[in-house]
Image (cartoon, rainbow, N blue to C red; front, top):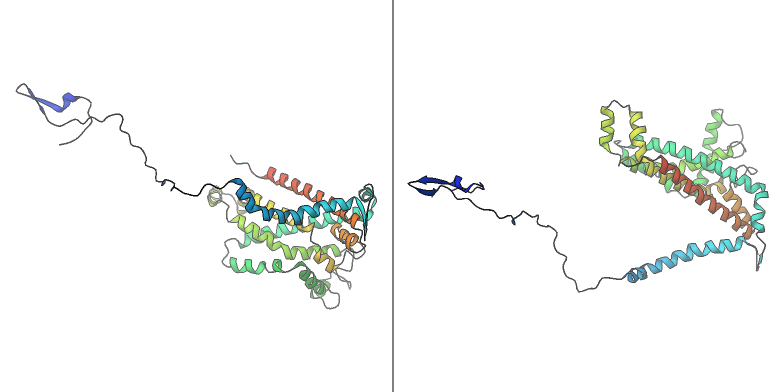
Length: 337
């Protein structure tokens, strides 16, 4: 016996001696019967504990918020307060914005900005170019892990120690790098740090040597998330490796490159350890970038009010330039359909 859903009931009967004989039965399926998916998610088990309120989570975060406020917000407002006063040992006097009004006429302050922009631009350009090249070369390499670990060693070194190492390498008497550059005819008897024309290059090379591995590591992580199907499709279309890198790989690296550039940009505006060890801002004022000048004003001449004004302007400009960098990279990043 077979079930079916033929709509004509007469098709299931055969006349025999004036009587109809059922050859097969017709099953009527009601319209209310439907196939419904059964949820595989188990019901939430009952709990006797009430849901925590927002105030409870705020109380958990309150100690961390208070610590952060104490070590960051309080010094920030104290810096603004000092910048508006003449700060001396035992007394603080209001000076009618004199610390800010004197900055435009301070030639060392203006030159500090020029040297800082020059120093940061050179460091960022070399670190991005070399870091991306090393990341592309190491990506998928047989000895990738070993080489990446080796490249990270300079970054693990304290900037002060790195400055001391390169100070001895640059030494005009026994420095190995000085001997090499002098043998190649690039340098004369003077050390690279002793000439105002080459001192900036010397401190830039130290920063590039120490922090290029960070750019390489960040870029290498970005290369792991580049869609392989896009690369293969581009290669099938006959694209060269360079064209493949420019049209597929580089657009996917925009987010990680933005992170790397912003991090290194802020570090160049803050870290002066190696510069103080290598040149101290000299020879003359050839490497006295603005943070070095700020250090001298505040902790060498103890003009804390003037130093606070310089630090506040440096902070504001750093924030503005950081926002500009983010906007530029957001515009260059391909839009998602």
